[in-house]
Image (cartoon, rainbow, N blue to C red; front, side):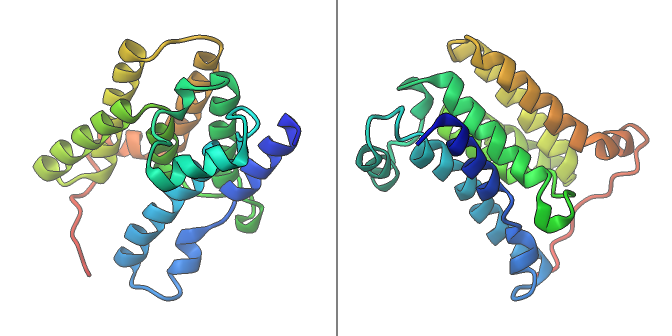
Length: 197
């Protein structure tokens, strides 16, 4: 399978609007939680499975998913290609044709990509998010703190090469999707989250 085909398939996988599908069967808050899990998985699987040529075989890639060793998969094979695969899944989520090219912000997808590419950075993102959320109860603020911690951790711990340019594009795209939330935070308009079941 050529690299171009793999990236196209990664984009198409990213376009699946799990939140919209699940909202037909679940309450809004439950749909968000379940969709987060599915969106994270839809970003992990292409990085691992569609990058099988980099990982020598589909069997090896699938075994990584089944035994949990997909974490840190970028440390084997071609990091640039794996990061490009992650970016294309994210682009598919943000510009889904099923949503008139107006997809979501892609927090879960970005987290899934980070989990597959740099699990320590993903863990730091979780810590930053949870600590901020439980103290402030503002999801957008918690998300941005998590992103900042993940970015710093990644730059400190992960080897950098050509894939860093892809990661910068990814980060800038993510922040651009959060522009309205950043404005609301600066103007003190973001409200605390309340669970409604």
